Length: 478
Image (cartoon, rainbow, N blue to C red; front, side, top):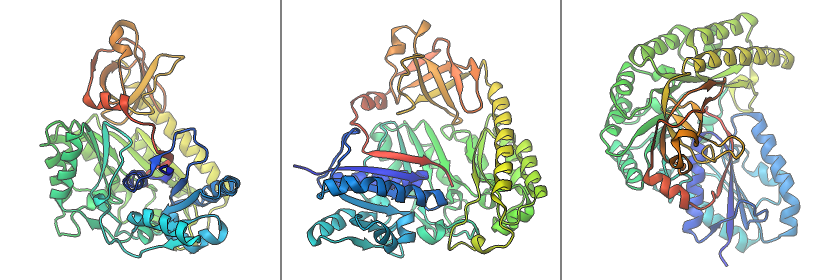
């Protein structure tokens, strides 16, 4: 009988995309995805994140919970990969000796062989490479969505942010050639995909490796020539590399969504300097002003860290000032987490936990006030919504389904009413036009009849898709 597998993913979109490759590799090797309710798959793979301390705690907690299941099912194998595996290496097997395989960020493709070797040798296999040998896009991939796909344009990062451990784990930036990227996008579109997200640890520094600082803007424009590709997104750019040609490409390329996720981290120049972020408040706000001048409807989201070592109340007030000026549509907010191996971990003036919590609470309250006000401006507007898998499940109590507007906002929409029978046939991957009737800080409701509904090939494919073999953990963006 084929062996079953399940993949559990923590972290950013890059990790989620890596998990699709892990699933593809295992299926290519003859494994089958375990049913969603299968508590004892033959192989469980944890694809880990190392950005925050709670990622460590969560992994080791889950490994502990899985230990009795492994003891009751000796043939079960447990593998740990991703950034935390790259960081902890043999420590994982020391702390959890029931783990069978540990692999790093640079050798995802080795997983099937390592599982076989661990089974044959009856001992744990730990293999961590220090540099990427094969770009992971060449590996088999099992996409979890029929309508949307991630495309890695680069891996690694050349920045030296003092709080971040990712460059040490993912390595220096490696860029794919534009022709390879566009060929992958075209193949996805031929397979029914209508939305593509371009991925990179520092996506807008793309081209640095082959000496073209305008390569990212050119890539966006090239995506605009691909027939059948309706939406293009990208994440995450770095303010220091953000150039006006990218803004022009976003504004002038019809299928590039007017959505920008641009990490701020702090509004204080002093803290940004300590973080080695290589931009300052004025530059950041200047980018936002130029984006909004070119695209008044753009939704801008961000990442913010509270309580970085040495952050004063005055520094924090500067962050609040930037939030008020930027009018973000949403934000991922984090309390600073000390990561061993990063320069910030050794900095003096670590901020007391109670102070960090108080600032975090005030930041979240301000953000919710602003995002709610910005969302209320959309009441009465008709939005194009791509019905989302997971988010697209119909709510039995309200009759609503959900999806994403072109600017990335989450929209819950009614499927009944004047839309009639067509409303009942809305599927994940379809496109609807719905008029916003209510706004909350983190979502919009459209409870009137649908203005339009377009069935897509991706929607038909979603109806016949198998249950996912990849379970997503904490979907955050660095």
